[in-house]
Length: 48
Image (cartoon, rainbow, N blue to C red; front, side, top):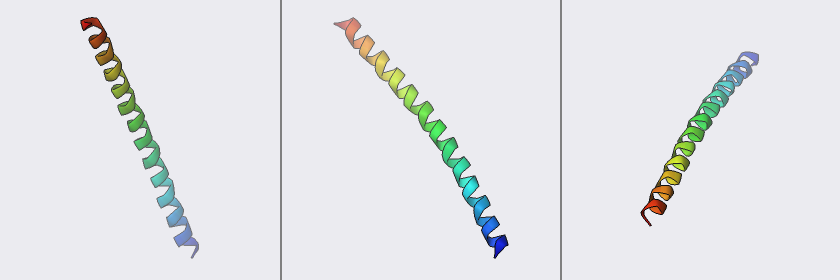
């Protein structure tokens, strides 16, 4: 029983690491999108 608890705890800890990694990747993707949007807005303003 204790071995099962320990195994499950390890699985959950790995999932937490995976989630944190995914959050970092999402933050990076979001930042790229924001930068691209800002650049598009600047380009549109320059045309006007």
